Image (cartoon, rainbow, N blue to C red; front, side):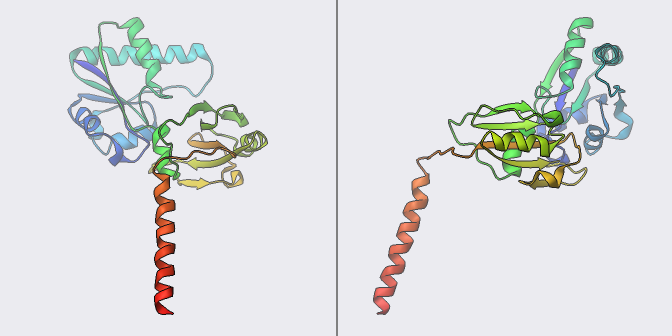
Length: 246
C-alpha cells in the first residue's frame, strides 16, 4: 500500500508518462491540489476517484502548515489501506507542492510507504517549446523571478514564475542577456505564448517562464562543421553547374 507522487508533465494530458498513467488508473484515490492538475488527471481516471484538497492562497506559514497537516491526515489512512496518488503538474521534486506533503507525511505518518513517479518538467519541456538547444557541456541555472526580480550571473538561466515580465526584462537586458518568454507551454488550459517582447505578456500569470542567455555567448559544437561543409559543398556544386552551362 503506497502513496505515489505522480508528475503529470507540463499540462497536456498525453504528456503524462506511461508509468504515471498506470499508477493513476490503478490507484484507489487520486488527490489533486488544484484545478489544472485535476483537469489533466480526469483524462486518465474517473471523477469518482478524485479527492480534492483545499490549500489556502496565502504566504502565512502557520496556515500553510495547518493545511498540509490536514491533507496528510486525510491521505495517510487511505495510503495504509490501498494505493493513493497525489498529482502535480511537472515533476513532483521540481518546484512542486508535493515536497510539502512528503515532508509532512514523513514527520507525522512515517509508516506510510511513498514512491515518486517523475514527470516531464517545464525545466526540460521549455527547450522544445521555445526552440532552444542546451548542448552537451552547457551550464544552466534554474531561478525564480516573481514580482519583477531579475536574477543574473550564469550564462544561461531558466526563470520560473515570471509575474512581471517588463520589470524582469529591464534588469536582464541591462545585464547583457537575450531573453525569450514562454507562457503556458504544453498546457491545454489558456493561451500558449512564445515571445521576446515582454509587453505581450505584461499581465500576471504564474505559468510564465523565461530563457535568458548572455548576448556574447559563443559555443561551437563539433557537428556544427557539417553545416559549413554542406553550405560550401552546395556552393561548389552550383559553381560547377554554372561553368558547364557556359
